[in-house]
Image 1: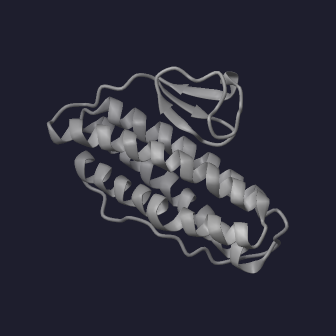
Image 2: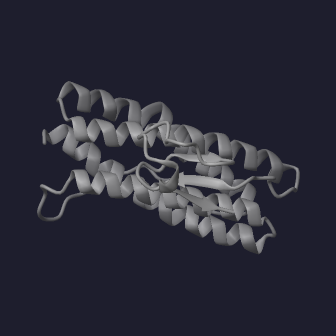
Length: 182
């Protein structure tokens, strides 16, 4: 793998791993504050982030040794409303800055596996933003968000509310590959 794509992949792995930890922590705080659906949303999206991290990590299977991951992260957890804002900041960074650049570099360097992993993550992060926006609007009005079942594709991490599709719109995995957070 070319070095620039490789470092982008290492950085993306670090960022997705940190997102998992943040969202898991935010889920527990939401539960304590009486927002169980917000907690469920954080848990579902945390799960999707582990799928992204796994995909990025597996793409780096050629590496052996220690490497530095330079990853953007949000800090300063607080109440659920603030945590949703932090989550949105992270998702927006990935959507608007990180993944589009990483995809273009991988394309330029003809690193198809890395490009696919980045594209799956980007497509999913856009869905995360929509779900976090919905949750933030509800919590901003002191309400737990009204959410149907949240479905996460176990192959690419694609996340949606409602019924799982017959095939994943990102990776074409079958309906059976979706994990339900109800």
